[in-house]
Image (cartoon, helix red, strand yellow):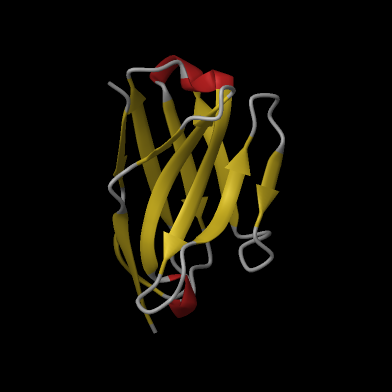
Length: 116
């Protein structure tokens, strides 16, 4: 059974930093594309960042230069380092895995709140 468990969310002041973690179990996640998405109240879920098996990264324009996605294969964990946070970054952040076979898995989400 594949499980993705996010952690690291919380309340931070604008300009601050948070690091989100996503622990994956039940699958060798290094053979898929990892991603972070977010969903703010009343808005659609949007892509934040992705990291492919080959190490290629992609970021939403709104977070480029501020957020960094990375992974630790030994720990089966993917991270999202978020710096210079803005109030508009507040959302529920979801971890996502798409395997090489096209199967998609989601975590339960972690709340990020940014005070101005």
